[in-house]
Image (cartoon, rainbow, N blue to C red; front, side, top):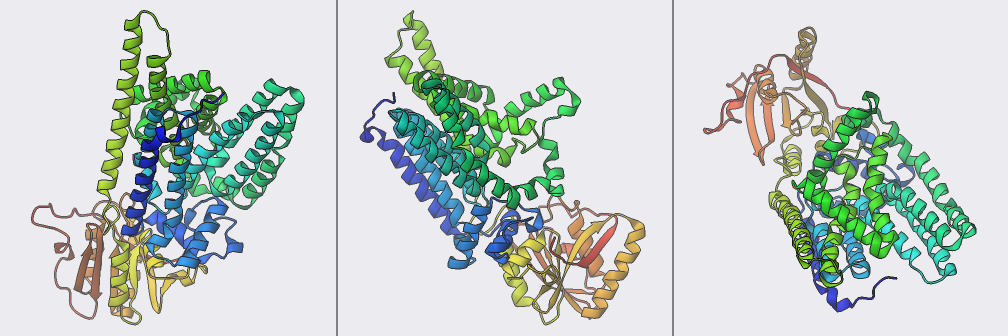
Length: 556
């Protein structure tokens, strides 16, 4: 049976949860400009009707259908500012802290509860994505809540109460799957444990009753899969983009085992947040073993979460890699916090002999938990320190597009990179529900620019630029998101190509990487444009062969 604990003994965990919630609200109010991924998912929520949220999402995005509907509701009711757009992820982050505090209150000592809530409040990848307009904070919250609710169901007194709680669990898990991929991923393993435990405790008939109650989840999953999930799974861009993160099953058992060994190390750093991977996994394993021995299925349920992540990776459903595996991180934090509880149990209840062995075990476990937890907290604090209210990793689409809206003259074409289009569409208020309308900012045509290394195509590309500059007389170029997409030297190439055909009459820079250049092709060239980009303490921009391809922008 679960040990009764005093609410007052867990005040530190509650204080951390409140402070963590306040921290999230504070950073949300700072309203950083949106990042390209945030803009893409927000464009889907903004310009698709509620009835049209199902099906393949634009811009190669994916999200649980219920979460996307709530995000659209927030944009419709509260507007399209950053605070309103990020309100749902922040609320999910606060929900994670509430669930962590409940878990700590119900199954942990005050020390373990404080560690769990603290890690969920400041874990580097958790806090990062809670402050981003993405569904990952909902994944984290529900993947923590569903196993805990399963443990709660099995701890009821009496067969009838257990069966009622299991029915509640199936219903909540079904609802959560519309709001969170994490809820979908953890539910099957939790269901197996629920059914097996019920069978073991009350017999085969009640075990079958517990399984039959899952029909509501199966129907719900089937509907959600048909409307949304299958489109994400079948998306060729996403499959190719994340293909490298799957285990190499086709290369044999040895290569697969090597991949698992590398995953154990890399996953501890990203997304768990510690470089002490061996200490982390050892402490987590001890915590799960201790919880299974002391609390039964509670330990098994949370241990099943990382095993589910690895299994889904082996089945090539979703790779357990960085943010795609973030949903199982809180369960691992549960294991780490439980290791601290195991230390307390050894100190006060065990009868290990000789005493020096018990002392060594206590000191070793406490030291490991302390080292790993402090590493995670430090990295989380550094993650917050790296955030700035006026930019997002060196880009500021918000101020940049405001300048474009002010500076453009009637009919001026606007040129930007492929992923720079997302910022232009979002902050420019461009309705992209019709792909052809996505090519215009008011009466200004929008063009996508990219590097072209093929010399034969470059002849046509340069003719296209000549025709564009001759027809319009002016242009505004926004060098937005292009990192890791366009080769080094692309900025200089763009300025060189356009600078041969006219004068630079305006240059503006926001943050470090957002550059805006106004060209007037009715005036003669006035020198190398890259003089604006280089500083006295930085080397000149490298030269790049090839040319700049220009094509009308379209939504993809």
